[in-house]
Length: 445
Ligand SMILES: Cc1ncc(COP(=O)(O)O)c(C=O)c1O
Image (cartoon, rainbow, N blue to C red; front, side, top):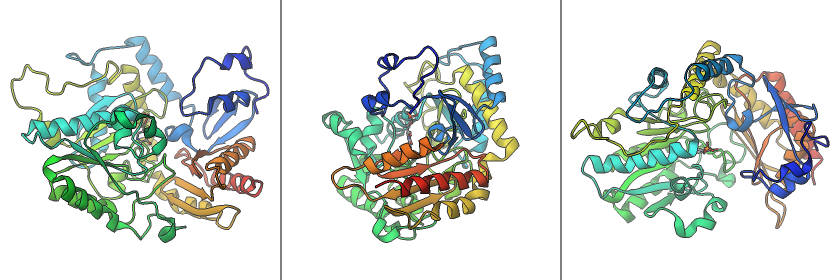
């Protein structure tokens, strides 16, 4: 596809990089190399413009090439490239935590920094278990995830996650004491729902069944994505998340929202917790926090969770957990500059204003070949294709390739084409995404 690789790079030079979540041999025989980005667009190594329909990987929420962010990072690197946060601190880490606390749902005003979504998830799971222990409920260690859930690739995340390919090679190595709720994707009842599906709130009652099976005295926390991205955009039925919250409260179980993709404006509010009016006890975030410029994640903890640790002798470390690069100065600088842009341009709520146009654009694809469902919320869209017999995922992969050839980047997971454009998208660009996707679908057997 990029017949000419970038200057100085030959096909042989592609060998050493073992690429993540990639069919390495297939990719390297036909590489897709991105070389430059600005606004809503990438440019390939051979100079073709590509409209970014997925905000990089759901993370470049303010669009590409934001000079305030790169300038803030450069300035910070020149001033102090690194400072430890174990028994030391640096001012902008505290400033950033306070700014984030101000954006969060009520009560979630204590922030633990990580470097990725996976680290945020494993951090939140560890905090949940340690919290139960800290308040004298040491038997509450079990974690409940959900089928089709994606919570990154750490051992904690794949254990509570529910995507078979991420789990099967490690089935004997999962962390113990995990169970799963059923997923909420039901095409039979909910195909072509606009926004949240009406059917399925009762699926949250399955948590009561798991409590009856294991007993609440053994369960530390439930973790779900308010909207799943990686398994193909799965939406919570109306009332589902509220019901989960009620059952968790009833049985004194923590509720964790994994907001790695829904955080920072994707659903029309700073966080899905606010959009859906359901407040979790812990919230994991990463994508969008620095506009993708520097890796960073953050776990938001309810003050009651945090305060349960603040007992005992004051000279003792309360939580034996942290990363060398927690609150890395360059990442903090990037995040502060990103939050400034979000505030100045109203990006954390812009998706709400664009949602109905986006919904109409995405649902206009109904009736095109192979489509069996279309889903949307905020600035998220998904088109589900009928899988080819015996070859799951191949049809959607072909559609993804054809879109890329025609200048639009979408994302393929299984037989779903997912879209999550930067929050600066304009209506004409929505039109282009849909037009190119339609042409690709018409062209695909
Ligand atoms: C809901 C959710 N949690 C966790 C992760 C993992 O994040 P990372 O790839 O930054 O480790 C992702 C990544 O897509 C995600 O969608």
